[in-house]
Image (tube, rainbow over all chains, first blue to last red; front, side, top):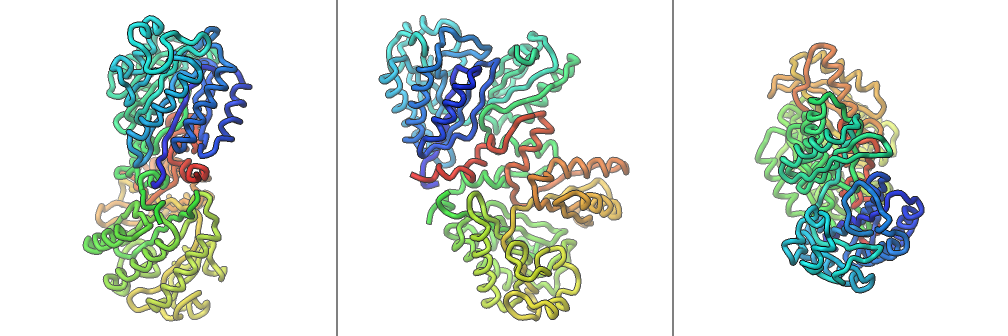
Length: 297
Length: 297
């Protein structure tokens, strides 16, 4: 592909305000060079995930615009949700697509982080492939309690060492694709959901939490697949189903948050349709990312 | 998308010659502006399906190159396979992708058809969205016995009214995406495969045949989905499994020939993973076809 393309998935800590949802929708639809491909809001997680695709300049502008909207609408000090969080704009990952190198994602994450910290006066921590401080690399570590104390020990990469009173802090960086996938159980037993989440954490490249969904009065196993080619949707779903069934509990439903690469679905065809030899490249759209020659004349 | 992109899937009536497979592979890899995204060869069908993506000029050149290779290597008069066929290069569909209009696919099909007929002196029939003669619109109709007789009644769109001695005739045209999908049964009962194929033909937008696979000594239900958003892989697979199970027969395996759009797989997630609200747009690569703004600066 001749132009460098990225996915960017800012997570905002607000999942209960339909006006904010509309405001984000409108603002993102007007951004040149950026496509908002999904927007999801969850009441219980109290979280919004904005899925963007685009080139570096457009995405940087889109993220700055989201910070403006967040600074006018979100007060983290009054926030309560089941999902762990650090800031009003909680985390902003940049993912290189196709032949775009990771270094290009690092560059756009860095320039965006600098500008956000300066303009909004809040601490920004660089994580994953952008981490300068090894203690900042892993998001679940950053989300543990006591961020303010840890900021005093380990300075943020940009901005003040004090959490912003309404916006908290922000984690930003380049990373590989990640699939966010939740499985809801026909059960109110939070201990059960946590047990299954713990079981899943025994698999490679899987992060998982057991959560209570007040709006549904059911429990949820909330899952991140950090290497979806290794452990995919089909595999974790089967594990959750089996583990729940062992305890006499059925799966109610599942949901994909934001976007997932096509390959996550192709593996399912191998198992469920006994499609023994199917390759990701047989997914028409997969090739649009991976065949550079298509866009050169 | 700023440049007009097409899929093109020439079907060659030769599925038993590994040297031809290599020759096609090499030739297509050298074509500028064209990506060969899949190449499949089937012994029993005696057929090769070349999956190409690219812009108009590159694809026209690629198709001409395939005719050259076919004219040097295939003699249809000595051909035997279970798949119905008309020519050495049997059918050449052009599918507009993303925002590319059907008219653009009609234009490249037309210019390619004219050039092929003139250069290789064989009858070319325009089908589907390119059909000028309603009797040529539907491929299964063209494949019924007696093509030579029917050419004398209904002249081909280009080229002579006489079938080429080695290359036969060629069907070419613009069409919508089509998914080619085969399900192999743990059975040698061809009547059973034909019964299931007949059952499937009762579904909208499904074409199906029961075939004998000598190489596996099993029967196959060979399926074309002409509107995969309407009836998808998951749905036909379930029907075949159920119909076979009613007769005490299991499914051995399935295979996708060439490429399928991502949406074919997303519906499976809805059923199999109970992913109630998943949208095709949540497939990362889907958006690369459908978000024009990504490629504009």
